[in-house]
Length: 84
Image (cartoon, rainbow, N blue to C red; front, side, top):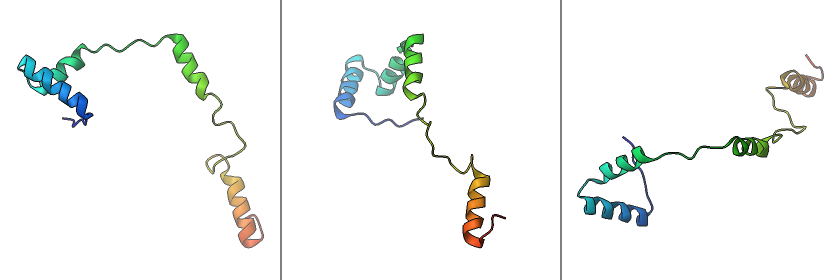
């Protein structure tokens, strides 16, 4: 079971449909979801979506997962004056 919060105007519209069809709101929502057919995404749209994020992480900043040895070397060198 899932609780869904809808804007007031959509909740009112859903209630009207349920009353008009003499069905529960749950039945109406289930029926709408079962009839829903997602729009297929074309290959061009898919490529464009990928292209928009391509290279987003290309920069000179590294994190510790890629530079752990350098990070630890710098830490110990600063703290103890030697890299080990």
